[in-house]
Length: 298
Ligand code: PMV
Image: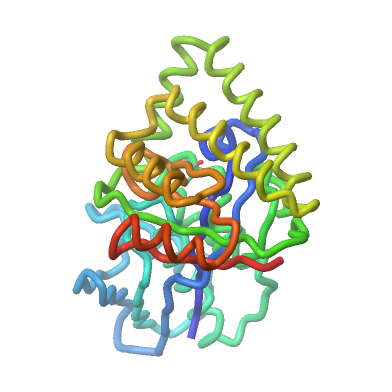
């Protein structure tokens, strides 16, 4: 069985595409895949009831991503790879990267190829490139490795030792969005107004640096404030929605220390930092049925 986990970006999304640091955590929910030798190559995606042959020119991105992955293996039998996923797609939780990591992990397993989790994450970048055009690589790296980590594009993940467990509550707005489009929208804003957007990225970097210290020092109150500030900067890049704003407010009213968009924005998910598990449960109830609690230790 191959496995790729989902992730929550704590701070730094979007800026990370442009070379600034970001902090992310791996969550337990993810994607599983099983590969078996078969008559022909086939990718079966149970959640969407899809069976796709690899095709580098295919109309369906999954066909192109599967072809890009298979091209990396020489001398192999045809393979059928079956995927199950526990993450909503287009929600900012890294569903596509988790599937890519799980697929490669499963194929490695059946072909008896061993590589480290970090190498597995790097191998899944070809998969992400099909979906996102210009991915920073944070999703595939975190999906393979997990924990709490600082990521800078093109560099290995740097684990962050969190003095206290991080109690996160993740809520899905029900609006899916395209990472490719949201990244392109920020790119357009950067080209039109390089000073404003450049300053925003620099401010996000400061928040990321301070958040690293807050996590290492177990200062959850400071971390919550930094999350709120990062959320405002993402809103200024037009990445929030009315629904996400309302959900962040509900979470804060229910006792969250901070709340923000996670991932590409324009819908998708938000998350809140809770001071403890009881408060996390209250926030989850306030946010509604689809919200879930993720407790991260590192
Ligand atoms: O695809 P998502 O929604 O999990 O977000 C990825 C994070 C971005 O910074 C928006 C894009 C990237 O490649 O880092």
